[in-house]
Length: 138
Image (cartoon, rainbow, N blue to C red):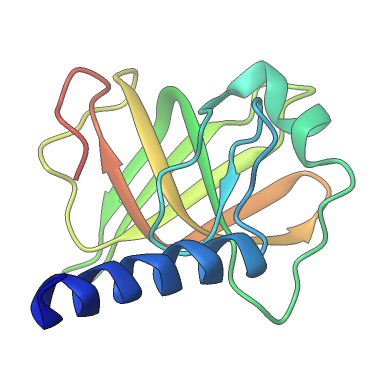
């Protein structure tokens, strides 16, 4: 096997092994993933509390993905704040990003980003990317 192909194969194996070793979420219905990875499942607002009930915010970043209607769209000139979910008993989810992409309150979007949970009724995704479900994944 040519040296270049061997190096490519070795790098691919290392990447695969490190993803498995680092705890890439493997649960079929998990909205969590390693940083900057697409989760295998996007939670819906009514599922968020149950799917996150035992998940602690740790020292290592983990990403979370949720799809739901926007309840808040705010841009302060530097950061954009997109609020999803929050109708009782669903926790509120705040996506902190850099632009609103002309998204409007009531529009259904998918947000994914670094998960933190300041309290049981509030989840922050920072950094976060948001897109309309029909848009191709970024």
